[in-house]
Image (cartoon, rainbow, N blue to C red; front, top):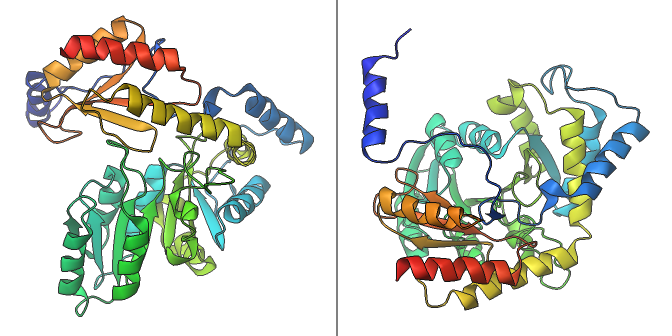
Length: 380
């Protein structure tokens, strides 16, 4: 059956603008593209420990068999959520099938009709999609601009039942962060509820001395000041799923009203066991996290002549306007053995197309030097 004309026209528009997304085979080049910051997705010890854990518990099941409210709430969920809550110094934790499910499930269920949601304009699509499904009023504030946020707060403080302020601790395109300490102070001043997505901070940031990768909120010891945190496991933990952290009352509410949790098959025992073992590994991975931090600093130093986003995170970007141009340079780096991906419009605004470098604990100084040298040559 033919695709409707209106849909064909949208595809044609993407092709004309060199913006068509396609599914490609996984690259074999040196990894500067994946979110596997600590190398956990390819960690043989984690893989073997998961198998041993399931064998010891005599769990031989390929699937969960149903939603968590029906037949899918197997025993590993309880152990894993308890470990996560303790690790993040949170009263409770609730696992979702993905970061997308967690954000859509939270924002579609929690903000109510007379509430207001104020969100950073660069928040992830999953956050914005969830907000669109809610009954609340929603307004964006300029990226990391707390003065602009405060203007909105002054406007809505008297008319909203509750105000939710939403941001990310590390943004996925530039790797930058808001001033979380100042953000908490603003929330306390206006009695607003702060929600922070820590997808790209988990495993990367944590206590400065212990450095167990708990995220930026705990690095600043502000976990008791944040209404909800979203932790995603598909980045530094190298597996799948996500968790919402908050009070026991919040978790009970989500179990009753969060549709992306209620109406989906639960994760398999193997998937949840992988989350648990990955967290246990993270708790003792101080050396690996430190190596990742050192790589981020070294990349900043060696690329100082390029206008690459200088952040403390594992994400570095260089804006190269135009889909055609940025794809050309990405192909050049890929042909020379480096897996670097272009980020095209409409994923980012037109004119903000970029190369996005993701650093890992397993990247070497020599690899970073070579890819930056190639990039300088191509841009000169």
